Structures are given as C-alpha cells and as structure tokens.
Length: 268
Length: 294
Image (cartoon, rainbow over all chains, first blue to last red; front, side, top):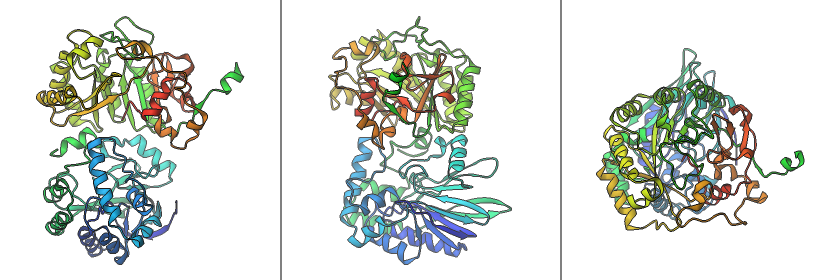
C-alpha cells in the first residue's frame, strides 16, 4: 500500500527503528518536544530485537507520533513468515528469525492491524523544502542506505526521481547524511531501538529545520533507561547477544550486511 | 533476423545500480582450468582498458546514478595504472575489486589500506579461490596459487582492509565440511578478524563446464517467460540492476562478455535498456538468486 501525506513543519524530529524499545521511544519523543519540534515522525520498524512489542505500539500511538511503515511492520502486520529485513548471511538470518518469531507471537491482533495500516511513505514540507520520508529507500522498503555505499551520483538520482530536496530514511540503524553542493541530499535518521554500534548506550534521532534557505540536520543522542530494557529482555528470554548490544553499544548480530567501512568501526 | 531478435527472452533494467568494468579484460596472470570467461596470460579477447576509457565508463555510470563500481578482469592488479584507476572510481562511488590476490605485495597492500581508510566511499577487495583447501584450489588454479593468495589476504588484513573471500563451490562441495571450518580458522590465523566468505555456485560455462564434478547445463535449465514476468525477477538476476563495460563495449553481464548476443552497445548509455536472459548461465543466477556484487 502506498499513501502520501502532505504536512508542514518548521522543526521536525524524525526517528526510525524502535525495535520494541518503548523506553527509548518515550525518551526520544520527550526530548524532541523539549527541543521545540512541531512535528514528530517515525520511519518504521516498531518491533524486533526488544521485548513486549505492544508497548512500543502503544507509546507511538499515545504520543501522537506520525508513522511510516517499515518492512518489519508490514511483516508483523500481515503475519508474514519472516521480517524481510534483507539479510543474506545464515547467522544474521538465524538471529533475525528468533527476533521475528518472538515479536509476531507477542503482538496483539489490534497492534498488527495498526501496523498493517501504516502509510508506506510520506511527504513533508519543512520551511520551503520538500522532504520525502521512507523506511529503507524510496525504491524499496528493505534497501540498505549506508553512508559509505551511497555516492553523490546516486543521491542525485534519488532526489531527482522523487522530486525531493531531502530524502529521510532509516533501516540500517546508523545515522549519517550526504549532501549535494546544491543542498539536496539523503539523511539516514538512525534508529532509537538499539545503539548505533558506537560503543555508547545512547540512541539517536534527527532534527530537521530550514536555516538560511538550507535544510539542516542535527543528530541528537538521547539517554534512556537501558538497564531496565536489558532486564526486561532477559526476563523475556531474548538472546544474550541482543542484551549485550543494549548494555555495551556494540552490535553483536546482523553484522554481515554492513559494508567493510562501517563494520571496521564496530567491535565485532 | 529482426523477427528472431524480437522473440528473445528479455528482462527489464529495474534501475542501474552496479557498473562492472573489465579493467584488464581477459588478461590474467594465471590460466585456471575452470574460468567462466576463459582468461589467461595471452588471452586478449578483451584487452586492458586505458585510463581515459575507464574514466569515460565511470562518468557514464555516474550520470546514470550508479550505486557502486566493481573492477574485474582477468586480474585487475595486472593493470599498470591500477592505483589511478582505483582513485578515479572512489572519487565517484564505492568500489569493489575482484582479484586472485597473488599480486598484492606490501606496497600495494599499504596503498589499498590507505584508500580504505581515507576514500569518500567504501573499498572492498574480494579474493577468489576454488574450494577451501590448497589441494582443491591448486588443482584448478595452479601450484602455489593458494599460498600466494593467502599471503595477499594476510597483507591486506594487516593494513586493516579485510578482504571478502569468494570461494567457487565444486559440485561435490559439502557446505558443513571440516575443510570449511578449517578454512575459517585459517583466515583468522592470517589476521582476518571478521571473516567474510561468499560462496559462488557452479556456473557451467567457459572452462568451468569441464571441472571436477562439473557438468554441462541440462536442456531444461533455462528461464521461461513466466520467470521473467515475476515482478521480483530484476532483483533475482544481476542484470536487472547492473551492466558491464569492457574494451569491446557494454554488455548485459560480466560473465557473458564472450557472447556476442549479450553485447548491448559501444558505451554504457546504449546498454541501459532491457537485456536478453536466454543464456543457460542465466538459469544459475535465477535459481541461486546469485549476484556477483552482493
């Protein structure tokens, strides 16, 4: 399903990948509101990785966050066989399936219906600029856009084909941006469900606003109660590898999809 | 003739993501018994590409919005201007290089490591082997090749550029064998802290068809119109998102450059259109959902 929504904002907070981390969702939304954001958008993947997926669904709904559907939301919402994350390595797929089976089994019928009904993309006016909001890329919901493998010539073609000043995406879990000389570009807003493989326990979201005729992104780290999340994950019997990521800030699974440049920055 | 061409089975180009450049053509420092495109030291079916010729292809690719470039051959590190060629690609897009690893000496490893750290985009080096043991590999590639490739892997790893190892599977390969576990241990001994191995399925073309345990294609092993009509087909077949440029023009597929029916024009721009998928090797990509670039 495709649905385009036009909204206007002056200062917009955008985040992705909740991965069932309802504590981070609450902390990020509180931070965004305190930072003066007049619109808050979530770019998909409510579940996966963490515990009690319904809590994140409830948090997003209660806090009035506007949402774009991710591959995980489509899969859980429509009770598909797997998360369709796009991994190719057997170990990555093993952990992805553990996570998906748990999430599917623990998402309510009402929650699934809400996930299935999310729009797949949105258009936003920020000041005088047009922002295209999507999950993986405008082309495919599970396309990975990494900083080291998204060249300017590709950014140019995306902005041209989708008639956008800025394309905002998530899916990879690591925030970055690449801008063209004329100011157009792609911003990966990162994920709030788990750390950015940077050895920090904080998670990241992105603020967008127009300053002097140019869209400017600010990546914002947010602390949350990760110890409570880790305890909850252990209580649900989720893999210790997942808990380790929350407590250390280093990814331990789903690593094979990383380009070499991003992979070498991590511990594993 | 026109009627016959119109009937060929074709696949639409979903979008152009990957530019393959056959920088050394079919010129290689070894003559493997299996090679898909039958390369060797004296094989110049496709010759070395000059730097301006490669830059033209890179500019064409950038104009078409490519996501990545792959250099292949033959053996790319035979090219006398390989470092300027690498810099030209990395100024525009992420680059992968397919190599047998044998020519990677200390200065070259240092130069590649520096580019891996400093270039604006990702640099990936992929070292090819046949099987995971010295015995299997050297039977196909020649005596001493396995050890020289391992030395190249070790030198790259020491410079912080851990290569992907592309291992061609034999028909009788056991994916869970002790040999494969030993191979992963060997990579760690060579200093590769995050071993990444890409398993290459058997393509039955070129000298490959005659390898140990190998066979030619069966008559039924070909794509059908129903296969190609699948909306996901361009993502299952590499040619749904890529093209290859050699000294001889632009082609639909990097391993079908010796097939005149898969030449699509003189330059990349002429090849950005639907391409034939009626070669039997297309069946291997289809059933394996195989892409050389992933």
